[in-house]
Length: 129
Length: 408
Image 1 (spheres, each protein chain N blue to C red):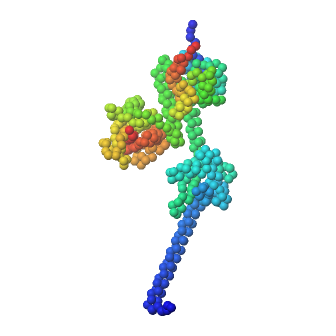
Image 2 (cartoon, rainbow over the protein chains, first blue to last red):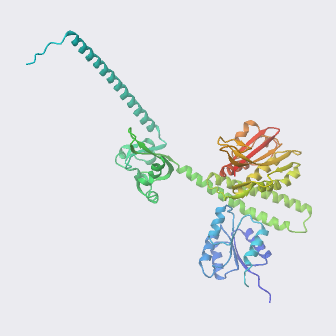
């Protein structure tokens, strides 16, 4: 019986970047379970059907990626979902804020697609189908 | 019974002379007193007129309990109350935002604590004017003593910074907005380019075109990074992540980065670093950025056939600020990187402006060397943040040497 690919939630308000992240997710051998354009939708989607990984943009309408990450960590049903934050903020303080919100990884935009693929593989390595 | 005998004539003469001398002395003292009084009045008048002439800054003098004794026209204008309504009846604390004062410990002590300990204090406080307007004011606090040297009260000199601080905040917001708005499309451009360049079926010509697009997108990205970094330096939000960094490795890496461009333009780059390395305590990323800036500048400003030399040496900084090549009493060890080129040089009259943001030397403009004039300002800010220095020596038409000195 074939093993199902890890399922990834992608949230970014930029259509082009959401599509680019989707491509990277598929290159990493995963499937895009849900893609949304705002933080509130991301939170609803993650709570309704917890993914194996959430890739969240930090700057989104509704709720920021940091707020979504904090909310996921606070809910026992989603506390273990790995979170990868993407952000145009590239200062050490930005990264520290992301990690303090509970993110497992933080990639500053612009990121390399190869780098994103590697992080997605790494963060879904333990995902059980 | 005692009989008073008349004083002899010479005694009378002596007494009259003494009397006259005493009168003359008294007159002299009177005159001196009058002069001193006039001088004091003139001095007080000068002081009052100087204080009264200050209309753009508030000068508020209080007694030791904070009760207002001096209230200049600047204070009247800033806080909207005439002197007569304030002096001897109001406290300096009445004009502060209560929540802010409470957060700082409350009362007069919160305002004067640091000045009491250190002799003076300058910081932003929020004043509340008579009409309720809140003002961000940079207040300099100093203790005031009387003529016997006993503390008589406090002076508060305030400059209204409301507009300046609002402008700073707007500038900050603007830079982060621009940074975000430019980084986001650049993410798409660079990401999709990366995917395209992965295609093995691309022709060499297509690959070359895409390479040009990528190089220019990277250039734009560097500019965004430089602008953001400059804004952080301005806002005092530039922080270092210090660790032990081998500067020799950083210099070699900078040479490697510049090698491609140098090779393409026919500039020879040589590196001379200590075999055992040279460790400084600093931020590896920022030091790398500083070295990259110096080396890429040197390559950029050197014509074909020219030479760029990177020489890293241990040296010592003397207490007078000079740098010597051998240890001596009182001198502290430093690392010294000299980046020399045989390029177009910088006119002597322009060298002092070289580290100002957006300044471009006339030679750079004349030779159409690309750039916006941020690299050297950033490199000097990085050097300063490491307690180091960046100096230049240059002869137009012969070449330039930038020397980065960092404490080890």
